[in-house]
Length: 119
Image 1 (tube, rainbow, N blue to C red):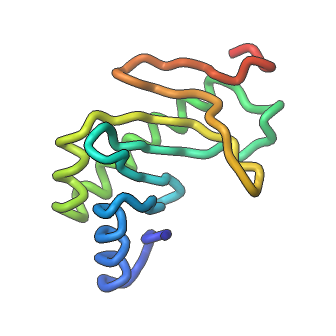
Image 2 (cartoon, rainbow, N blue to C red; image 1 turned 180 degrees about the horizontal axis):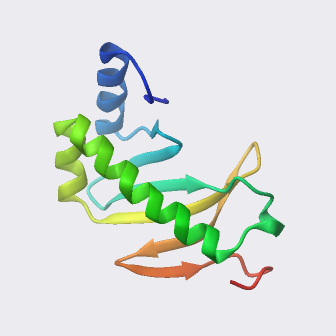
């Protein structure tokens, strides 16, 4: 559910669904909680996978951190989860029916995952 620019009722519904474990999109970043294990923060490539670089991934992951902070400021319930759980950042390729992680940042360590293209 995309809650970017949503009216207050839709925004609250989105946060409620997020708290129940569903994904919520805000400003082109998708957030979902994996139980009490981690807060997944997914950003997506604007390019075809073969034209995507590790620098692009780093930039999108950094942007997703800013978006996470913005959403935390808008919702105390979201903020509580964001502060309680460790963050797992992923940069993904979404090619319609499925997506795949091209890069990740876990515990502050960036890893380029797309093996067919050197980072």
